[in-house]
Image: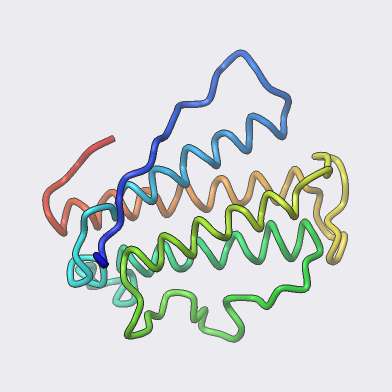
Length: 170
């Protein structure tokens, strides 16, 4: 089995259809697919490289691993009230750290599995509802936060991919 990952289909959200949750979830889906596509075809060596001197723990694979932890915490645990374990226990945030067996295929598979967990956690929730874990946030706020966090890290993946092999796609 290859340790690289493959590109996934992505579509820009329809600007004229969908309620608030639908639109936000479509943007999140677009960003998720973009993140996956940014690591598609990278070797493990390219994906674990940390070329930014000011961010010595930031690799393309680390970004995907971190985004998986972001989804687990904010969507499944905070919004949905899941009792699943957090993927970032402790400080500094260990979700950036890679294990020996982490490769593009396994990290993308874990990220995609988290999308399913997030969908289950969000099912039936409305934007104005308070989160089920602590009630400190609305679902609207949590979803907007995850969209902006994912977009921010997709920007990091843009730079990391260009530094890895020169690819600058969309």
